[in-house]
Length: 128
Image (cartoon, rainbow, N blue to C red; front, side, top):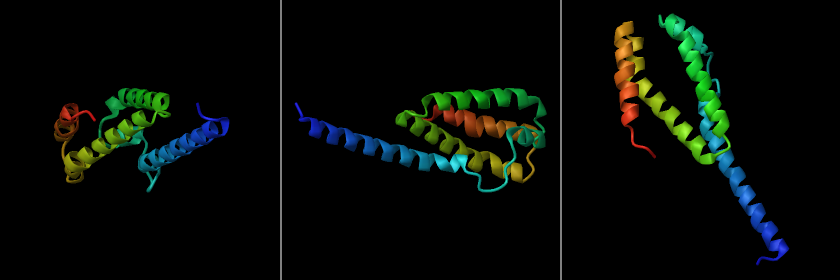
């Protein structure tokens, strides 16, 4: 058994390591929460994209994701999974969908690109 002072030192080291881990995760997640430029909210983006009919569903799904994240945000492993998921979606969107939108793809073309470039590939992505 550790003497009382040894147990306290051991606890302090664990707390410091946990704090550093939380800081590292927070810094990694900051890219998705920090505004770098003026941004449109979800409703405005959908309206501009001609997807007004999807607004109620998109808002509901966004709220469900936020609730899930909030529920699990204190678990470092869960936060890392959210970060990886967001990074993967961001990468796939910027690779497969955004270039087509920027060059004037139709609503149908964009929908197909989202389905093929984001959803299909993401569902096949290996679990980490």
